[in-house]
Image 1: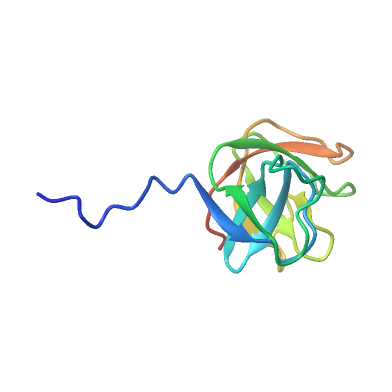
Image 2: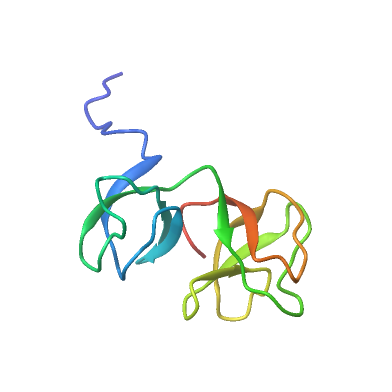
Length: 119
């Protein structure tokens, strides 16, 4: 069996920032969610700049606060496109993974295991 079609593992990909992205922050690129791991000599990855986005792993991400925004370990985690924060509220938000640890409604960060493709 030939591996001529294999390109790479795909755990991280060079993608173009859909808006300004801070290091260790998530971004929705089309239907793909990734975390810009930073570095590359930049304090911010500017709109349209290419950077390496992590598509897998567990990441501490900024979380919305308020009623029903927290979740149990293993609960689905969603990305709010308007605020760029993580929440447990499905609504019109994009599914990006699940909570690796429980988080409370008042927590400002959450550990999220990424799915790499949003639903």
